[in-house]
Image 1 (spheres, rainbow, N blue to C red):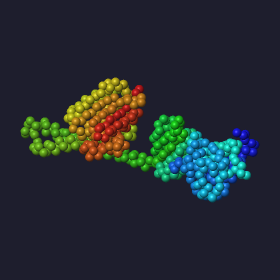
Image 2: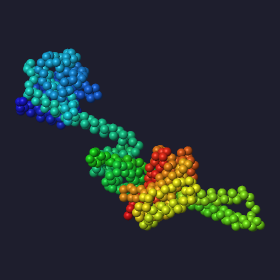
Image 3: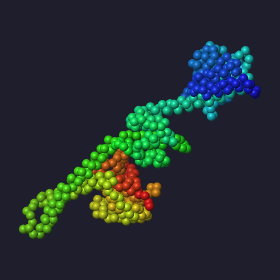
Image 4: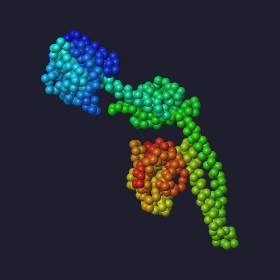
Length: 522
């Protein structure tokens, strides 16, 4: 095959400059085809792109006489000389198309054009067929040569790169437009930033929420205290990290979710979604103050109710053997006093829970840790609940793995209440005729703890996110009537997290649940 001449190389360099000057595909292809026609002295040229859905070749760019009519024709892969080239992915020169069995007259008929000779090359990028490039009718009646083919194949390679690059750019642009549309329509503030912290995109609400933002994430939030710290969150391996932002100079709070954007090998950026929770924080603060106030106010009359009813019952009991000393009281009166006392004690336990929750949530209750045998702690809880478990027909088993638990630094009284609450719930929210509760060891990462398994009804999927919310209980229709305010698990969560631990559960509706807590091992 002949070497390319100086003029040919000049035109190829010109084609390269065209490729680097614009990403407008049709403009690039038209200019490349003009150069191709000039260099091989052809009367016309076309680029046919593959429609993958229909497996047809579509005339995308056509230059020469009556080109507008050619653009209306489609060829099946395998049809005509261009279709054969697409099917075989091989270049071909046909200088006498009338005598070639692969020739299809359909294009000439549709366009009112006469084709004498054709030179055709496949457009292939990384092994994938993109289309076909063809030039027709060598001027002055001569036929196309091997030197012409060498030139056209060079142009074909450039055209394939241009098509692939343009399509990639179009896909990226479409995805960017789609992301910007999604971001702009979001009711939450949203930003996307790279691994260096440079903000690449922010929606309008983020600008409104922050009063305008700076170039990078760190300077944008320099007036906020962030929990956990931004650098720690960005270095975390977690895909999603929850963040809390508190303004240092005024009462302004944001809650955020930081998402890691990755490719198969590395992190390429982050998405941060934010919402204003200032009003929620104020409401929570008011709620805590109200709970604390109302609980203290209820405590005083409850002390009198329980105390005087206890005193009356003691007097009745003391005078039971001495008729003249026994007050003239009917059995119904005795029952009334017993009911007052019983319900007063129940109300007192609810108020105590309210006080405990308010105090633990505000951090007013100190955590007094000391090395503790978790197996011994488990035994103490079971001994206290033994009679109650028997009354409720509970089959309780303690797995031997509990004896392998190490010594853990914890506040015994508070962790005692957590385990007691988990066992209590495993029984109360189980309406099966035979209640089965199993206590086993639970390990997570570098933490150890205890799991309480039951054979109850489990938890419906729609309730799973709410289980640890305060004042939440699953509907009566699902678990039966259960007394309480829905504070037990909320308090347990606060206690475990104050120990830098973790509490959670697994559940299968209809088969039961497994609640667990784990604490760091020291």
